[in-house]
Length: 309
Image 1: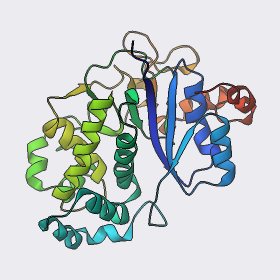
Image 2: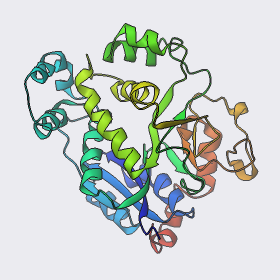
Image 3: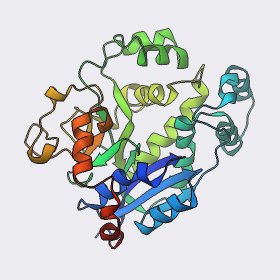
Image 4: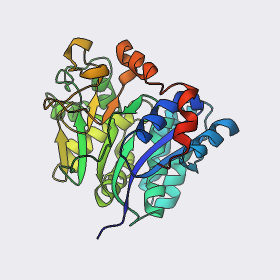
């Protein structure tokens, strides 16, 4: 019998509990039984206390910039020259922690956490936090692969994303890499699931890919993720259609494209609730539903703080 817990893992910096409440409370209202772990930096004592009251496991991490962008990341073309010398992974990772942007450096700290807690978890969801809410247990259904990644809207393809994903890929890797991926659907890096073995392989590959980048200034997390799931780890990865698995990434879905059930629940093609809604805050009607459920109000705090995640 497998007694290992499942894990929901995210990283946060500078948020208030008001901003984190929908994520935390919505997960606790599902049938999820496992650990909710937040790696954190620059949270107030009040926010930390509230998170602990709701059963969140808190793990601090260091970050050496004042905001989401790290000034030193712009010097990566020079700093990366250190890669020509044989240095240990701990030293290399220490450099990464000093210079990478917030959205990117979290993966190095996630790797530290997973390696420190190896053999503790069965299945893992690595997820964004502020713009994510849960409609059901994210592990409700069997995983389709050791690593499970989720596609964005069908219109989101390499070669047709001139504002963000295409220039990021060119800047982080090269024009040749963009041509190789041209026409391929884009997968969102904000939600990745897998077995503990699969997620460890994914995060190790992610951090190992950093040395190949020409730039780490913008969009590097998205670029690496798509190179991994489309190339480096494609044999281990199951790519799941948007809205048809555990995750709905809905920033680019017009409201009319979403199938809504009773109370505004986002449904999959089988009429079941999609467990994880990512980027829900781009849709006013979904934000209004979250508000109506009390996920962003203090009214539910006492009730939910009595139950352990």
